[in-house]
Image 1 (tube, rainbow, N blue to C red):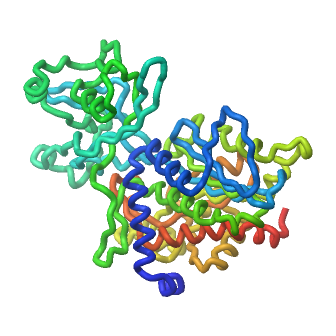
Image 2: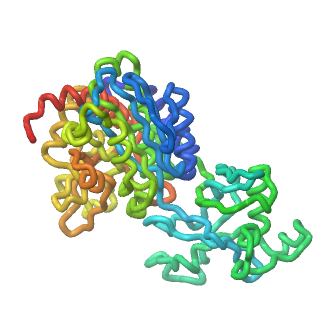
Length: 474
């Protein structure tokens, strides 16, 4: 900690953290995350590609491609790259646990207009109570003979899930486990106010609705149409996430913490994206024999088994496409053992109020660097070989590292790391910046973690080929 902090001013640490906050506050849904990544990549000189089109990839150039507009893969081709050379990769995920609007969301109960929602991922759902919520995501709109994809983010509180008063549930402080179907239904309005505003009474639920506008409360439809500047009959369907309207911010008496939604895993997405952009200068790329790549996937929180998830064929298709050449029919197979992936996903920092939950010798702390994740049962993909490679990179860029492993009597989460190690047969390492309150609506990490992780990832892109040359292991 001391070596990194002493050489890095508080202003530099805070500047990196504040720029990350701009990113996370705009990334209110996976679609908005991809939109923000795309904006930054285009500004940095990357060229957008389409999966359905022919690619003419050139050394020392930079590109990106999206799938479903919720997954994005960006890469910079080394000036010395030849098919059969390796890929220097960092993977992360764009999704976070949240509540999502149901396809038929209109509910009316006891004079209250409510919105039906579905739990996405493994959230700490009691943290969604008594928060000022809104909606964000994408809407499919018919315009003439086109079906258009439009992003929407209502930037004011429109929904709320109120707690039941303690007087009506005296044991709430002993045990609170809400019924996810009955109790996690947010309020949108009252029926009487809707009648005053719209001049007509609400029409009940959506069981027999025939069109998209009929499946949802008119008030919600009017709001979405107002944001998009379209008429209700042009709405075809939408995918909307609920989001907290309170933005992420610096916190703590010394402003050393970040209090924010979606740290898992936009922290890793941001650091990977920034490292790729910052490392991909003409001078840095000129002599690189590899392709530097970031892969930011959707649907990790629900198992990655989707067309845009890490379990899909997307990564392999793109790697094969980039390695393809008529002069070397085994270029892809030759490239895989020369490649390396960092699977970046947040790690559990030690919690002083729950010390017994952490393995006594593996307790990642704030400010002491990203934590390499280990699990012999392959919940994480790290091996002694991949850990050694990253330790060498970290030493060169002077970023401290920690180790994390769960207790034998505790379940272990997993990441995209084992999935991609198995699908591609490449060496993979799992790592993450320490955080608290993972999967809460408001999470917590330290400011120095942003700069530490970005510095480490930038060093990986710049030094991996030379470190790989040191390796004497099949």
